Length: 125
Length: 125
DNA sequence: TACCTCCATAAACAGAAACTTATATAATTA
DNA sequence: TAATTATATAAGTTTCTGTTTATGGAGGTA
Image (tube, chains in turn cyan, brown, green, purple):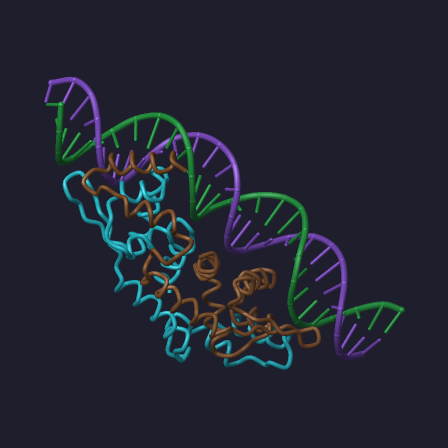
């Protein structure tokens, strides 16, 4: 789940989407992105860092230049994986053990009852 | 592109991912989410609003209760659409007209040259 | 009518994020 | 060696986000 959050957070920013869109054409140097996007170099570099930290990009040093490559594999894994994550049986997801249990115990007829049972649930731990 | 940003921004937050995961099991009332996630009601409501504004959720009033439904259609359209967006020929994307043009004019051998040409480019408009 | 439930929203605040300016470093070139 | 290029990163500032607390309103119920 953390990886989904990191990736989606990285994708949820217009400049970074533009960078990704350009790197989808071909790998590029920072200075090329700078020229094409007409943005300051630190701005580009900082966005690249966010994308790299989310494993969406790989960097490659070449003399004093650095070029960045989009990892289409990671992109596909995340985007498709997320759909699978949503479609999966929630009782099989370790991260949702508690939620899954509380969900099963819900009395849908009354939200108060739901809250009360959740409280008891919590108290009995 | 705006829609991608809005959706990804909405998805890039752990609580909202949890909410989505739960609503993937079935539509739920706010009070149910509150009970299952054990979070304050305003917190849940505000996250629901973000998701709704991104068209990921639809809301449905039922007496004094409100339940929320995940729009699997929107989810799929966005996640798959984004991959298509990246894969498309960039020259066909109206939002990247300028960038596309600058990209085509790049002199990759020198970043300075790139920047200069981008400047000239800008000056000649 | 009076109270209660469910929910939305506003205000306030803390922490995060994005941008600019400034600086540092490594590699290149003159 | 000195100057330049390409890039990263830090500092400072502003804006955005997420959370809690507080409030209000619409719909049921006693």
